[in-house]
Amino acid sequence: MTATTGRRLALFPISTTVEAGAGGPGLAIGGCSVARLATEHGTPLYLFDAATLDAAAGSYIAALAAHYPGPAGVTYAGKAFLCRAVARWAQQSGLWVDCTGEGEIAIAAAAGVGREQLLVHGVNKSAGDLAAAVAHAGVIVVDNPSELRRLAAILPAAGAERPALWLRVRPGVAVETHAYRQTGQSDSKFGMDPQQTLDAVHFCQQHALPLAGIHFHQGSHFHDPSPIGPALATVLDLVEEVRDQSGWTPAVLSPGGGWGVPYHEDDLPHPSIEDYVAFVAQALAAGCARRGLPLPRLQLEPGRSLVAQAGVAIYRVGAVKHTPARRWLLLDGGMADNPRPALYGACYSALPVCDPLAQPSGPAWLAGPYCESGDVLIEELALPDLAEGALVAVPVSGAYHLAMGSNYNGARKPAVLWVREGQARVIQRRETLADLLQRDVDLPA
Image (cartoon, rainbow, N blue to C red; front, top):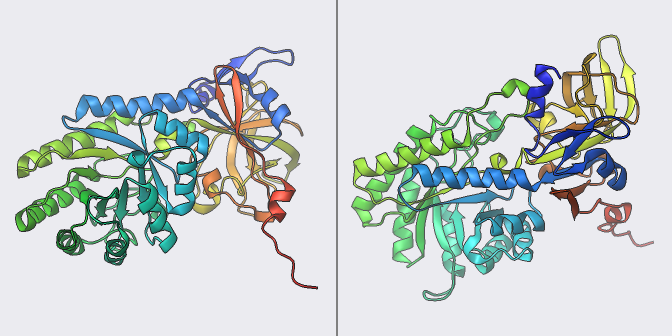
């Protein structure tokens, strides 16, 4: 095994092994042969490893306990990937579930997520979104003054069961990430500026609304937590001003999430979850102490860093092409199930499912079947010779693949399996041709 292959294997779920078989060595995840699962369930195929999910959640919970002296919790970001099985896992793991819009709320509610563990986001919530949030959520994160006024008109009377409100602040500081993933800058479409936030606190007090928290978010998939420092200082200065003007302080403060993960062996080593949590927890505790503010509950919202490593995408090579400068491996999936490389140049790695430790023979370009030149999943990756019919596994595929997927070119969404201790269970069935036609309505003859 080369050093590169060893680093590449480290990107896979923690239960990944290379096991001997009748046809030679092959990848196993969660105690299940990946080749066997691909034969039984077809490709493209997504696997989610329960052990990796459990370990990531445990890392966050342990780091908060070690570094934050006040109450704390973790929210799973449904936008990364949500289905009933994952929502149920989050609930059973003691996590809250963050939903955006009535569609995600319906999934979480169908999974049995209780009001006390369901939180709702959204930059432009529709009437249906707000109605679903009021009916099912324990927390609604208010994005703008208009939304706050609309909520005031539909929230049940005081004393009835109703969600707590958090105000989303735009701190004016973004983290270092792709521009499409930045959310905290002054011109962001998300959240309220400090003056709007002050006005919103007064509005909540005047209308006896259940205001409980402050939220901000600076961007997704960042690797250095230091920009959180000035944003947190800005928000705590605002909290201090709110306290002096109104007497109110938040019971909960959420600095969002967005901690990054390594997608490619060149991203290793990567700072740990504990590095990120320790920075945020210590900065919040110290900032509150300096301002004489009570310690709020610290609620983190990790998205991809909870679920990305747990997911692996399995594709089958349909054709091998050689052009003057490239070896193309054409796969049966691509931008319809993973649009991230086409959207913002996300960089991935891969291994053959069979004989994954084989010596690479040269670079390969892995592309999908769709009618776009941008449908290239991986560029110039060192791989051994692979023939038509070979299986390829792409790690770190658990976040923002299926959630952002489409039916482009009539693609049908892949099956998703939950693997644990040698057992594989379908948690999302493969989409069928009948599913594609289900929404169509014929014009009158």
